[in-house]
Image (tube, rainbow, N blue to C red; front, side):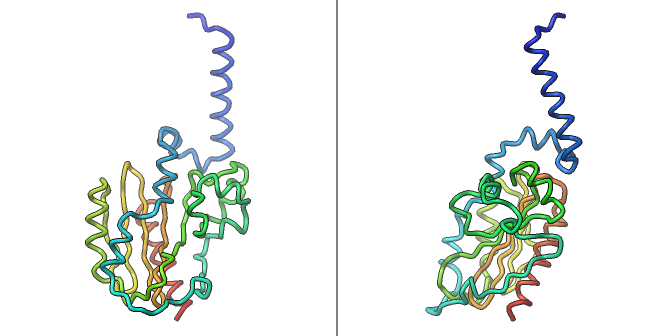
Amino acid sequence: MIINKPLLTILTMLTCTYVQSSTQYPGLTNNYDSVLKANINDLRYEFNKSDDYEIEWFKKATAVDKKPISLSDINKPVLTGFVKASDYLDESVISKFALKTDLDGIIYVLKDRIGKIKNIGSLSCEYKVKLNDYHVNRYYHNLKGLKDPYIKFMISKGYEADVFIDKYNLLGITKLQKGYDSGSIRVLIKGRILTLSIFDCPQTEGKEQIIKDLTEWSELLIKANQ
């Protein structure tokens, strides 16, 4: 079989690129094929999209005509091993993954990945945590009664969803779709609802680690604001 020179050159370049990425970024190549085949736009949307069911949650949740604590007055401790992305990375690197409408949220990444993220120049497929609040100045007494609507909605969207904690001030749920694990936990602090979200795009941590990180981080938030 005769291969023309331009095609041979392209094949050689692709092979070299793969070898270089495998050696330069070994932490990203454990699931190279699955990540390569994934639609990164879908993954990006999954992590950053606003939940359609949140409005229904607010309608069902018990609220009073009283302002909750301001987000700026809430202490925001960081779980060991993570750092605030904006303290180490340029906004251009963060905005390649985070939607412009979601840049008001705080994104955290694993500290030992900072060097590699700078080299790659993107957060596209990192194990990340996002902290958001609801931007609604209503005071909520508890999160009870919000679990079932959440689960029902997620199942209707094709997710496998499980609750790992359900208290008056904590509601944690893990999700699985297309082989990718994610999770979120709602934390009630002095009337305001915060959300911690994790999406395991590189598929290196798994469901149990997501639960561990979300649980420990939410406990840090509650303790720091007592």
